[in-house]
Length: 91
Image (spheres, rainbow, N blue to C red):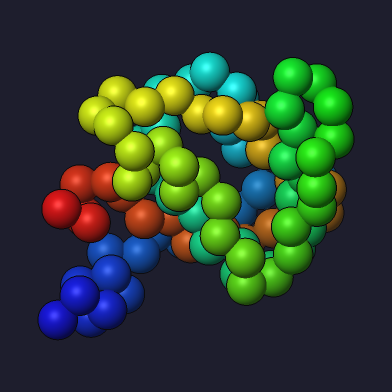
């Protein structure tokens, strides 16, 4: 089923504080689940919001059109544990 496949394909990544996870305008091929930590989301250089444990980001590029670009820059505020889900794993 879908959730089993999702869990089997989840890749764990780590980010140190102030590490850019992706930049606005980059091509997006995965979405992230924030397992631990805090990330900032910036659009056109301005802070939009902070995301915390349990929240998802990067999904717009994954569920959007093929070759979608990132709509914001996301960077870690603290040490983060991330679950990465590739677009191809959702097809």
